[in-house]
Image (cartoon, rainbow, N blue to C red; front, top):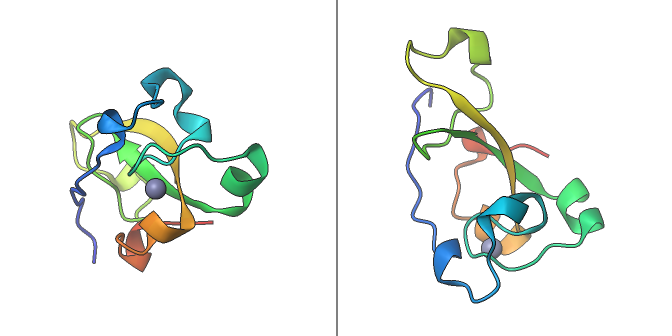
Length: 89
Ligand SMILES: [Zn+2]
């Protein structure tokens, strides 16, 4: 699957979610992740449009106009909602 996908993310509704601190919170649910959990867990490659890039598609091969917003961590449970083609450890 080489498509950019959209996943519903509810992090904004989590009471302690802070978008400025996304590297230690699950992007899907907003729950906190310890640095160790994030480091060993799943990450998704986010575009500025909040779609998730297929991990096998190098950024230089992305369509024109699609820009990276960096990698965001996702907790183990939430990772199950994301196709394996779109998450990486
Ligand atoms: Zn989560």
